[in-house]
Every structure is written in structure tokens, then in C-alpha cells.
Image (cartoon, rainbow, N blue to C red; front, top):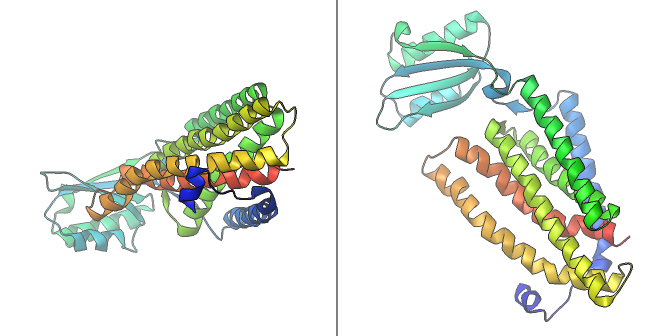
Length: 297
């Protein structure tokens, strides 16, 4: 089927499928709303890293095994968010959430006994959030300014309706990624935020390609308004282009995500790759199947 689509030998009637896509979109909105409400009521919570919340670090030199590290990560004394090791060195760092002095002392003693290292050789330090309230506020302000410029640019280049549809598709991609992180309790780090911002650009890129093709179709057919036949033909023409673009983008990201984890190369690279992987797939889906119900109205 994909081969026929790619060669232009068959057509999918997207207009007839528009009602189904619209119902799926409404179902997704219900899920997003439910998850957000569960977050506000405390049923679910954002798993923010110490870069956002602040916390404590414990650094020392010792010999260790994977089992030792897993034991510390699953400790009930403190919530340990991550660890860091160094090549050609026995040094290791554990990052945990900030707690009472008693809990921090208990965890320090636990590490000392676990790795047979004197308390005095463990470097303990409290760290503040590197992504504090001020940085978050500035980031959100910049995001809203960016979205405002996008609305103006798409409205000027195409029409106001297109800018609203692009925003709907973009918000859909962000909410989908956020919902997955909330439901699976994945940790949100600065690398995750950077990846989410990257998703914005990719989602808009894929959607604007569709708008541009629609605009060209109107000019070729000398139409003032889009009709259903033009919409259907254009959707079919860009479908395989969007899928092929996504496949070539996802393959290297999947390599980072899956092969990197298999080799033990976790950390900031994985934190960046996971939301990017979700966002690219979601962006491809939304650029076609979220925009169809609104463009066909």
C-alpha cells in the first residue's frame, strides 16, 4: 500500500476518514485532560530532576559493580534520581532529592557501609536548582513570544485558520509527550526540556509543508478556497513524504535511545533522545491526521 501511495497509483479518501480522525482527536483530548487533572489533584506528579528541585550529591572513589549501583538507586532511604561514573576512574556520584538532616546522614552511612568507604571520604554537597523559577519564567515568556511570531507568520503567508490549526497540532504533540512522561513517571531533566523545544520546530516544519502544498494546489487550480477534492489529493501527495522524512529522522534517534541504553550509555543523551523520538512520531501523525478534521471543515 505504501509503495502504491509513493508511486501515486492509489488514493486514500481522507475526507471520509476525517470524522474518525476527529473522534480520535477528541478521545486524545479527554485523555490529556484527565492526566492533567490527576496531576493537579496529586494522583500523578512530575518527576523533576534535581536540576529543577535541588538536592544533594554524594561523590567518592571506590570499586563497584552494576548490582551495587542498582541497590543504591532502589534504596528507600532517599530518592536517588541518577548516578554518574567516569571513564578510567573509580569515582562515582549519586544525586538524591533534598531531605532532612537525619535522612541525609542515614544515607551517607548507608553508602559508607555499602562500599566500605569512610564517611570522611564521601564528599557531600547540597545543590540548588539550576533551572529555577526565574529561568522557567523567562523560558515560558520566550516560548509565548515565539508562538506569537509563528501565528503572525503563518497568517501572513497563508491564512489565520492555518495558524490556529498549526498551534493545535503543536500543542497536541507537547501534551502527548507530557502525558507519556506523567503516566510512566519518566524523569524530566534540562535535556528533556531542550528536546521538547526541538519538537516544536519539527512539528511546525511538517505542518507548514502541508500548508505550502495546499497553497500551491490552490494556485495551480486557480481556486480562491480549498475544496474537498483538492484537500484529498494534497493529503495523498504529502503523506509518503511525511512518513519517509520521519523514518529517516527516527532511525538515528532510535539508535541513540535503544543501542545506547544497551551499551550502558545512558544519561543526558538518552534524556534528549526519548522525548525527541516520541515527538517526531507524534509530529508526523499530527501534521496529517490532526489537521485533516479542521481543514476539511
